[in-house]
Length: 145
Image 1 (tube, helix red, strand yellow):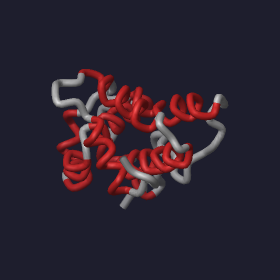
Image 2 (cartoon, one colour):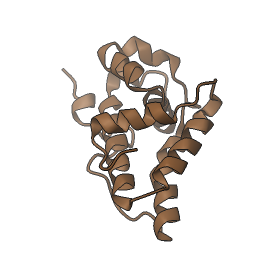
Image 3 (cartoon, helix red, strand yellow):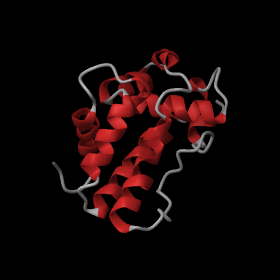
């Protein structure tokens, strides 16, 4: 499907793996991502992890966090990513769009790189991405002013 994973190919991969029918908990999306990335190579898994962390990091903003704690906020952000590029960009443009995402968003999406990396290499994922996707790690998103 693709070689390296840049931002555009990341979103194409999300779209390609999104089921046509309702997908509670994004289980179908996660399974399709694992299968697709599972064909290798490892650098594609690493690229996916980098793009996923960047997308989540960009959503780590004070105006989106209302009503969420650390983990629930992370899982809701994962849900916004799982919803695809159009919805994701709508959230960035208008924080009110984020209200539809709850803590049962897409926690399993966070573990896709770990699972595929283990399947491909037989080793645990032992690497950090350039951006942390943990809640409250984006200093600019939490700056007052």
